[in-house]
Structures are given as structure tokens and as C-alpha cells.
Length: 293
Image 1: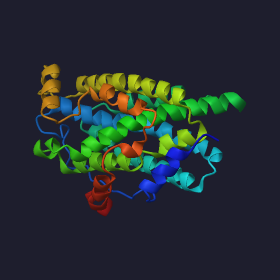
Image 2: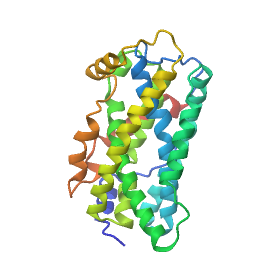
Image 3: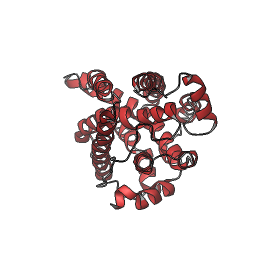
């Protein structure tokens, strides 16, 4: 068993149980461009809450595969809570996906391709023995790196005052902020599972860099696809101007995040508990309209 000092420190600093919340969203009044006048920004947000959950589903399967190797009862509890939250994310975002599909945005076909890619690249591949164990460690390292970025984006979603100022539909705003808050809440789980099962710095650094290199193209390709498939004749042609404008005004996170966050993740003493405010996340989860419903 690897050194689990990071796991113990995390539990002492953030001593609360992670659990799936029963949430309900009503998408019936959500328009196609739910950030008014922000077509490209809407589709960047669509990537965050329609495409990325497919990777989270693969991540949950990987954590379930690691469970038999984890003897620490508290870490097992956190992993079980993480898997439950990811399952709720998938079902909640599926409702949004179906609604946008009904408005004419071809989301399902692209999401199916991403799901196929996640299953065929990040699945267990039917390995056994030592090869299975090594591939599990590799996937845990990759997912730990990806979770770093989803936690950072989750923190951004919680603090992005530009979204309500831009008039983002309250249901979609609650959806992405609820998801973002839970990303902050369970930010340490995959990292701690990796540290428990493997814990090697070299693998953590290599897979973290690879995770960053995979997520950035996924964002770009996914946004381009959704923008191209947008059926609205008034979506505008100058997508580059829309992207730059939305970034400057803080309506979408900066793509430079994929580069600026890497030095922090690569510090030997890094732990996800060093990221943003857990209090902000838990406060939002206590007052989220969907959670209270």
C-alpha cells in the first residue's frame, strides 16, 4: 500500500461525509441560448455540463474497480459517496441534454461519440493480473489530474458573478453551480484513491500533464461541434470575437487555466484540499434550489 498521508490530512481538514443529493431540475422554460446574447459562451458551458459527465461516468467506474483495494474505511466511504454523486450528475445533465435536443441542438450524437471514446480509451480493457493493476493505477492518475481541473472550474462557476449578470437562465445557473459545488466538495477523493493505490510522484506528474493535454482539445472540439450544430440563424459568424469577448468579461473561464494550473498540481506537496473554499461549496449546496426541491 502506498503512503496515504495525503489522505489522512484531507480527512482531518475536511471532516464531512460526501453523499449524493436528490436534486430536481425543471428545464421546460430553458431556451436554447440560456445565456442571452452569448451563443458561444452557452456552448462552452454545454461542454462543461453535457460532455464532461461522460468522462465522469468512466471515472466512477474506475473508482468502483479500485474499491476492493482500499481497506481504509473512511476512504471507502468517500469513494462510495463520489460514485453516487457522479451518478446523479449524469442523470441530471441527461435531462438538460434531452431538452436541448428537443430545441434542435444535436447533442446526443456527439455525446455518444465521447462516451464511446471514454469507454474504449479509459475502460478496463478486460486485463487481468499485474497488467490490470498497473492500468488501474494509470487511470487513477489520469482521473486525479482531470479532477483537478473540474474542481478549479467548479470553483469558478461558484464565484462567476458575470453569469447571473448576463441573465443566465436560473435553472441552468443552478445546474452548473450545483455540479461545480459538488466538484469542489469531492475534489480530494480521486487524488486520495490514487495516493492509496499507487502514490508515485512520477506517475502523478506524467498523468497530470496528459490529463491537461486531453481536456483542452476536448473543450475546443466539443465547443466547435456544438456551435456548428446550433440551428439558430442568428448565432453570429464571428465565433472568435465571441470567445474573446466572453473570456474578457468573465462569462466563460479562460483557456489558459489548462496551463496555469499545472505548476500547482505538479508541486510534490500538492493536495486538492489546498484548492478553493469548501465553505462556499457547502453553503451553495445547502441553498441550491434544485437540492432544496
